[in-house]
Amino acid sequence: MRTSRIYIDPAEHGGLAATMAQPDRQLQLTGQTAHYLATVLRLREGDSIVLFDGLGSEFEAIIGAGSKRSLSVQLQNETPGLQPSPCRITLAQGVSKGDRMDFAIQKATELGVHRIVPLLTSRCDVKLDEDRRAKRLRHWQQIAISAAEQCGRSDIPEILPFTQLHAWLDEGHRGFILHPANADAAQLNPMAAGIAEPCLLVGPEGGFSEDEVDAALKTGYQAWTLGPRILRTETAPLAALTILQWQAGDLRKTSNA
Image (tube, rainbow, N blue to C red; front, side, top):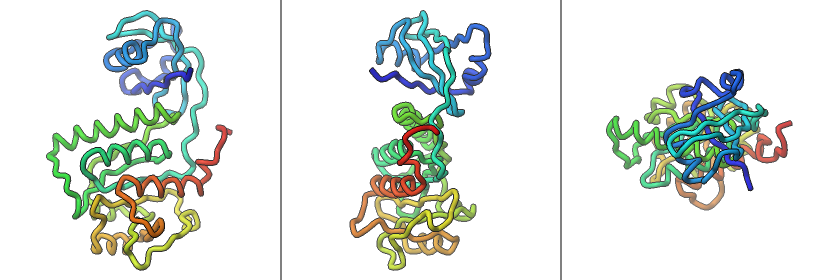
């Protein structure tokens, strides 16, 4: 049976390395984490789990005494976690309705993206006030955490605040804009562009406007098409990220060496 991996927020416990340095190596888990381990996974005293805090290492741990609301774990061994992708990709994803954004964030995390920007564009139909934006960001960060737990990542992609496209372009990032209708878009080799930390711009359901594409091209982005088919807003980043990570070597690694 696969050992469960659980993310521990370093802000709450001071980091797992600090706990490992304590004589008893004991950590008290409460709230949703304790409930998940005891009720959802039905783990009991003596069972093994793996903990990580997004700082690079993982820690084998043994569940101790406790309840559904609070239980103790004892750290056993520290091991090197899965190394991040050598290609530090930023996904700037046009915000979309329903669960499309959830899906894109989940799969981008599995594919090793470094950070994700919820992008507001002229054709974005999602209207949220500041309170709902904050809730949505927390929701997306939890999706990224859950995906990292499942896929074996030892780091957590950062979910940046909602950002207007033109404000993002003004920051001077370089990368690629997916726009199949652009006559100049090419099925290029992204790695040949020599961009160490590329940003991938993906539009919402209605895509980018011509003015937005022109603005991105003027700031140094390269137009990129993935072929003759029009991909949905949640499918396009998966295809593009797979190509980028394959060319970077991340999807061909078989060990941490």
